[in-house]
Image 1 (cartoon, rainbow, N blue to C red):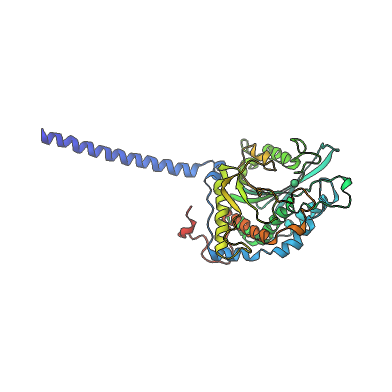
Image 2: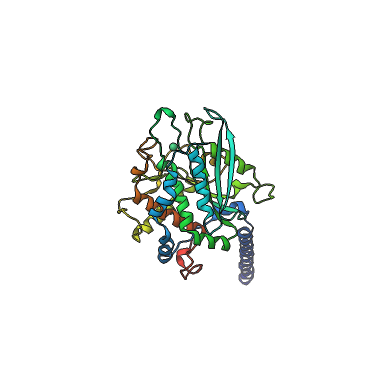
Length: 381
Ligand SMILES: [Zn+2]
């Protein structure tokens, strides 16, 4: 009895170990299958940014130059540029020329249309710059280049819309210029993920903000992208599926901005910006940024704000809305001009944004050595 009873015991203990092995193999096969067979539209949910070393950061950020950005890209944008105006034409031309002159080889396309407005039908043009159009996935940076229209009774005063949104557009051009080499290298090393810059027309209401008198450009482009198969020839996916993350910059350029959290689904990316701010602070890369200064507040919820992300949000795109809360004190006044901009803040945000993009795309400066070292513990997710 006793011996008999031990034999089945041995058999029983053997049997679970075989089952355990079997299950382990099953789980492993399933894991391998899932990680390799994941639909490309879901890859964004698993995306992890890399962490550059301090040396790589130093090198990568050595090309950004606030004074150059100011003269080359900001000044040309500080003109009256409501939809259909001569200033709008000039700004469009400037953006196209600036991106066209870079070595990375941006494809710039236009999304032009005419829309009824409270005054009359007006022409609108969005500009879409894509680093590598054949890449399925895109990190998107977006701003609006139009300025708010003030009717002729304000004659003699010019609304510059410096924070709204000349500075964000200039920051995007500066990013493309400063990271030209890194983006060029990234384009040839990663065929799957790229950077896209959107410059919207007609964000502002022409008369008074309503669902139809606002967001002219972004409403049109979101619709167009939804109708456009992506990748080319796809039957069940469109260009909106290609957006990993839609980062909208607005009302940037005043002192002491605080970016709160509107969207729990992208909190981790706001936390990443906070982390980058801390890292650059500790490297003495930020100017007039003492210990008490903090731009990014992932744990500070703020209410939803109507802006160019809305038509994309409504179609399921993941949004990171970089707009200060509260708005700058000069918002929609004639004081939103060049004189009231805060140079230190803009310079700091340029660096933070540039590092965010580099790390998201795993784009490293060319002349540092230990890149793509998988044993670098900082690269762990
Ligand atoms: Zn505005």
